[in-house]
Structures are given as structure tokens and as C-alpha cells.
Length: 246
Image (tube, rainbow, N blue to C red; front, side, top):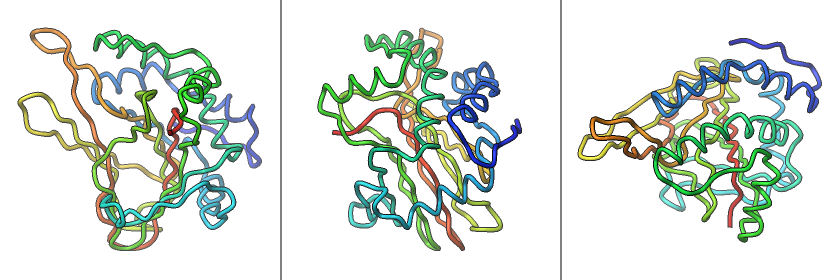
């Protein structure tokens, strides 16, 4: 789905854009596959502006070189508070749309945790438990870089859905570097999925696990995500995670 984008993005612009998304379709896709793609969530100029922040170290609380930790190759930076306006706006506007899905999934998986309607209330829960560090991030991949399959779990309180936004254009800015998901079902081999994102597209994905209806009832499947090797160019991604870190 394509949506008009304001030249100077405001909180109201973000809310209107999020309201225009077909959230019923997003929910259906998440139930069926554990992921849902939102076309052109951000404009090319917004993507470029976000990617340009990567060079501004003062905007971030930490930098991670993946190779040092066995995470792959490439690097990423976690934003510091206060978050950039666009990132904060998307985090606050999209979270309430995902809460009904998250609560329904937990009910189906017999997980007692329920999530409040407002993101501020959920962040207060994280902070009360000592999860004080913001988790939205920018990732940068150069030729030869990749991201191993992983899950973004940062403490006791985890919101089960997150957002990944591709800021670069495949075929123009970089080659390779496909966004990948794997799903591990009990006693079955892992199922791979590749999401063909374009610049400005967002993927809503399961952070950890999701419910699947089987012949004997609902069971949990485990999901991981990563990025295949970048063959050429420079690739930037924004990650919006709704829980904070210890």
C-alpha cells in the first residue's frame, strides 16, 4: 500500500500514516506467517535522513561491531534517549495497533503476560524492572557483511513483535543483503523465508515465537531473523523494538 508522506514529518503525519495501514491484513499475515510487510511506510527522503544519522555519534548510546561478538559482519548503533522524532513517533503510534495481536497470541500460547494499550505504560513497566536502555537502532552493512539469525531479547519484559525498515534501495544502493526469517516447528526442519523489501518498506515480525494451530491444538513455533551477505554497496536498516534493555 502506498501512502503520501509529508516533507517535514510531524507526530500528526505519523499517526495519520499509521491509521491508513490495513491492520486487519497485517494481523492476518502475522497469524499465517509470523511476518507482515507494510509497503512504503517511509518516503525516500525520510529514509535518507534516518540513514544519515548513523554518522552522528552523539545520537547513540552504543556501537556494536558484529564480528567481535560472533553476530556476523557489519555494525549497528542503539539510539540514546530522546529518540529521533520519527523513530519515537512510529514506536508510539504502531505499538497500540500491535497490542491486540500480542495479547491474543499470549492467550493462545497460555502465556499470562498482557500488554497495556499505551506504549508509555509498557515502557514504565520495563523501566520499573531495570530495563532502562532504549533499543531502537540503525544497522549498517558494507560489501561482505551479513547478520546471523538471532532474536532481539533484552530482558524479562519482551514485546513479541517488532518493526524492521529498509532505508536503502536494493539494486541501486546495494546488492544481496536479503532480509531473512526462519521458523522452527517442533520435530520439523526449519522453514526459511525471504522478505523482498524495497526502500521505505517495513516488516512487522515476531520477536521470539508465535502460536500455530495444529491437529492437537495450538503450539509455539520459534522464529529468528537475519540478513544474507551483502554482495555490493552499502545497506542501512532501522529497527524499532518496543521493549527497552537491561
